[in-house]
Amino acid sequence: MGRAQLGFQPMRVDRGDSVTVVVGSLGELVRVDGMGAPMHQPVTPFPASVTEGAVLDGIWVGTWVEHEMQQARMAALPLDGEWVTGAGRDALRQRAEPAGLMPSSSVWSRFLDAEPMAVSGVEGGLVFTTLRRGVYKIGLDATELWRTPYPEWAQLSRFKSRDHMVSSNEVDGGVAIWSAAGGVCVLDIENGDQVFSTTISLPDTLSGVRYSEDGGWLLLLNSGGVALLDELGSEPSVIDTPGPVTDAAYEGGSWRWTGWRHDGVLSDGVANCTARGQIGVGLLADRVLTNDGVWSNHKQAHSD
Image (tube, rainbow, N blue to C red; front, side):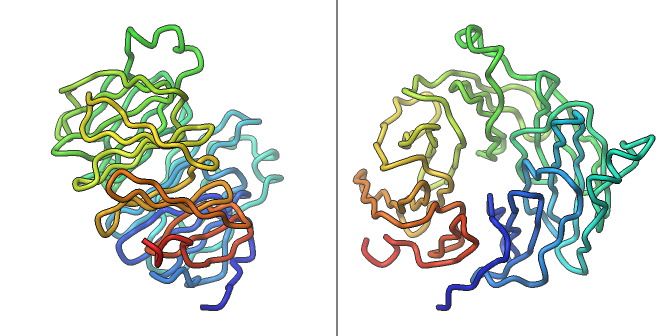
């Protein structure tokens, strides 16, 4: 395969069944096919960082946060049709009512009064949290389906001032909300009622969480390493890695990941890591997108 360049520095890959969205460090977006080939020129719909995103049925929903102006947006862009670049930062500064400026190409958009976090697609819509406010489920048309109080754990009260939600994962008719300090609560996906809550003792804070029905839980630790959980409440098995892991997926009976200058695979409890020159930022099947905007084969894809 050729080493195709995206033309911008990618930060994250939001995977979908047929379309995947690559997010750039300066708010760039591009849809790519199953091999990572761009389906159009990159666009920048809004002049702020894209902090979260998820591919749903027919739409990609993203969040934009402008920390300097303390503004946040959420918008849905269609997975087919044209995406266009929106207004620049000057427009954001000059508008008397900046809340009226929304991401271009969106089928719906909202101005948010708190920073959105832990965004994920679930059955029937999208779940997300806003800092210190609550947890929300909305439908594909942005209709609010339920809201529930912001999760708290008495055991983590000493971390409360700097703790935040890092992931939401659909699991067995519920959605698990994870905090950086290792708190996890499971909410009923239909009404938001809390059905389970616990804390996981970990050697480091969490940067993200991945879940697979077959593979269990893979917890990504901020400073490097991953922790494997068979089920919530079980004892984590911590595995060292050469650096932080940025993305992971369970395929073919094993966890595969990429991260800071390495690729890794976990099979039968044994981790194998191979060095790579660049930093892996996202996975798509057995392909890795690195921070220079290039796709290449996963270093462990053909050696496990």
